[in-house]
Each structure stands twice: as C-alpha cells, then as structure tokens.
Image (cartoon, rainbow, N blue to C red; front, side, top):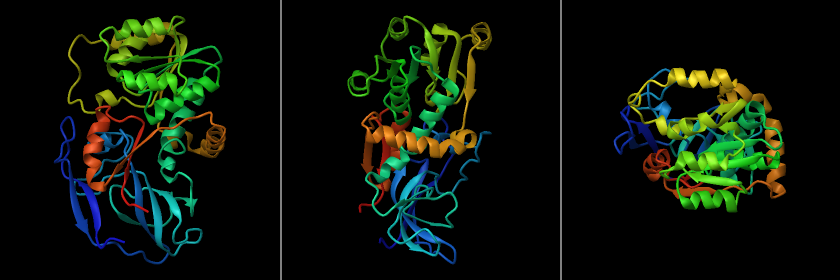
Length: 341
C-alpha cells in the first residue's frame, strides 16, 4: 500500500476542450473504513466520453461534479479491508471509486468479481457499461433484422466495435465509420465489418452512400456532426437510430455556424418515419444486465466477439489520456492502470 491517497479533483469548468488545468492532482490521507464498510484500492480506472458532461454544470441526466470534488468514474478495485458480508480481502470488485487510489464503500452498487478474474479490466469494457450499451442499444432500440444495413460511428471504440460484431452475428450488413485507415482496416479485417469509411476523407459522404447501396436501416449514433449529416439522407423508411453519444459535440461552446437545419431534420424523421431514441444504459435497461452478461460471456468464450483494450499506466496520466480520448486518439477501450498487482 502507498502511504497517501492521490486524487484528481475538478479544478475548473472547462470552456471547450479540457486542459491540463481542468483537473488537479492532490494527495490526502488514505481513508479508514468503519463498521459495515470496506476500503478499496483502485486497480483500473475507466475513461469514457460521458465524463466531459460531468465537468459541466449545464442541465443533464446526472449531477455535475462539483469544483474540488474527485472526478467520477467506473473502476476495478481490490478489497483492502472489509466489514461487509460477501466481500473479502483480496477480492476484485467493479466499483465507482472515481479518479483516486483509494475509496471507502458500503457495498451499494459494487459487484464482486472474485479473487482471480481472467481479465479484470474487461469489467469496464466489453463485459461492462460499454458492452452493455452496445448490446441493449442495438437489440432493444435498433432491433435489426437479418439482411438489414447497420451503420455505426466510432466503429473501433468499445461501444461501436461491439455493436458491429453483434450486428454481424444477427445477420446484418455492417458499415463502420472511424478515423483513419488503420482503424478502418482493423474493423474489416479483425472485426468482420463489411465496410468501414474514414470520416476524415474529403468524399466521406459519397463513400458512405456507396457502401450502403440499399440504404441504412439502423444508425447507431455515437458522434454526431458531419457523420450524422451524411447518414440522414441515406436512412430508409422506418429506420431506427439509437442515440448513445455525440462525442464530436462535447467540447463545443456554441451551435455550429450555417443555416438552421432543424426543420429539415425533423422533416426527414417525419417522412421516413424514423425512430430516434436516446438512452441512459442503466436507467433504461439496467434490469437486462444479467441477460446481457450471460450472452456476451458466451459469445466471448466462443470467440465470436473480439475486444481491443488500450492500457495506460499511472493515475497522473489520466487527464492527458482523457483529452486524447475526446479527440479520437484511442484505439479500442482506454483504461488507466492505477496500481500494479
């Protein structure tokens, strides 16, 4: 055990992109767990785009992080001490310690992963919130039928990569959108996508249309911006659009320039009878987690779902890694290894 508890706290509300001044690294004493509590040491910290919203005090589905508070985040941790039945010293747990070394928990919302999970960090990815988001958003909102075309943005991220692979398992044509030739090559060669378009290409919209000759039946929205602009005209009648995220807009400080296209968009939704549904995974589909966990575990064990992870060592490197995540620099699920076992 280290002698202090390092914490990354919110130092300012960023205007636009977070900077090196947005989060401050501080040190405090390791907390003590009392009766009915346990002390957890963070092993892995998840980095996710939603965290940018928690830095803002704009109205949202969850309360913002207050200035001076530890930044929120999902974690895999090990139990250091425990006075809670069902949690023993040395157990790995899925928890919400946030961006710090240690946290005290009463066990609420904590899942025991056992003494020796094969891939403990996967509980923050394909077997956790991102995987669950992909599975529920696609199967419950997208509801794809065999032979339909699915387009998924951020196609090599932890959500998009899983969406695409599930789509192939369900018998669909899958077109990914990603940033760069390496990511697109990976989506087709390793993940089995039928096509993948680089959104940085000058003729991106034309390439997307050519890759979707029968139109688009399901668009899994992760990014917004010009990708959404290119998708809308290609949507088929009765298309479905699960709205998971809009990462291209998270650092925006004002609406984009140009004409107001809201009425055009609403007209497209009306005439094509498009179903557009946003969702917050555990609020809307939490009751389905056991079903997801079993099905996803079976797929992984059978080699039907592949997963790519990017591990960055050191809590102190989390801010830069998060800034890069919002710019699309990650290739797969990005996690911080806070402590070495």
